[in-house]
Amino acid sequence: MAIVRKTKSVHTLLEVMKQAGEALSVVDLVNRLDQEMNKTTVYRILDRLEDEGLLHSFQGKDGLKWYAQCQDCSTEHHTDMHPHFQCVQCGKTTCLPLEVTIPKVPNVKIQSASLLLTGLCEECLT
Amino acid sequence: MAIVRKTKSVHTLLEVMKQAGEALSVVDLVNRLDQEMNKTTVYRILDRLEDEGLLHSFQGKDGLKWYAQCQDCSTEHHTDMHPHFQCVQCGKTTCLPLEVTIPKVPNVKIQSASLLLTGLCEECLT
DNA sequence: CTCTTATTGCAATTAAGTTGCAAAAGTAAA
DNA sequence: TTTACTTTTGCAACTTAATTGCAATAAGAG
Ligand SMILES: [Mn+2]
Ligand SMILES: [Mn+2]
Ligand SMILES: [Zn+2]
Ligand SMILES: [Zn+2]
Image (cartoon, rainbow over all chains, first blue to last red; front, side, top):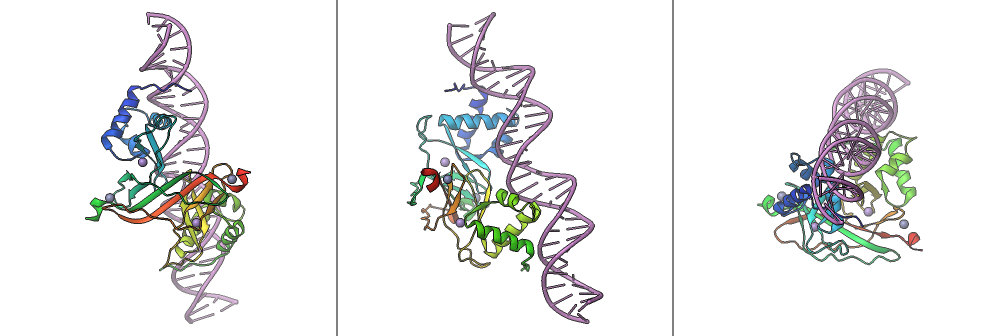
């Protein structure tokens, strides 16, 4: 297995994720980190951090890739199988700490499930 | 409302969808119809057929857009809210005729839910 | 410090999807 | 069938997310 170095760039990126507190799209991250590191570096670090179990990713409603912090994952245990919510108006995207009920499907072996809910967030509702 | 003409291209595309019987990615469709019509035309026809309620679309696991035939939709009634399954090995992608249980999320208004299951299909299992 | 390996920046590339515009095809009335 | 009008199509150019190759740089072990 490859060693994963905690470089300055890695620290910076993780700090941004922590500050945000919610999910961020890669596009957003690339913009936010424009002064700190190269676009390619953002993609590569996100990839490594996901392998390491510090972040998890999912596809947003527009096909963009999003990342969020994991609660309790590691290289061996990737247990972040929760649904996500994306506001159609403001774009705010969050992890939902809910159990996802995987339906039984005959004759196939389900390996993972991704559930994306879209609608209006609390702020956009009022 | 705009008139939607059943042109030769539309007929050809619908025929391909019918023959396939299962979901097809736009990329796949563009390739299959390469001799019959332009890429842009494929995108535009799919768009119209979705508006019309003859097809529905969803995002595959790799962010590609997929289309499948609707069972009972129309311009007014878009009631195709079922989950989809995508085989990680052969790519075969199908509609699952199952009720999707939308979890209750406090303080937000859920408008739609998309559930994508991935794993191994029947053929790839054996 | 020195060596080795992982990481990074940069420019080029890939590929899905979109857009503007002129030409072609469909529809209905004359 | 012709005419007039509207929708659809092809084509080329464009946009943008994501990837790749390679040389330069930074991290860490000893
Ligand atoms: Mn999450
Ligand atoms: Mn379907
Ligand atoms: Zn919102
Ligand atoms: Zn398969």
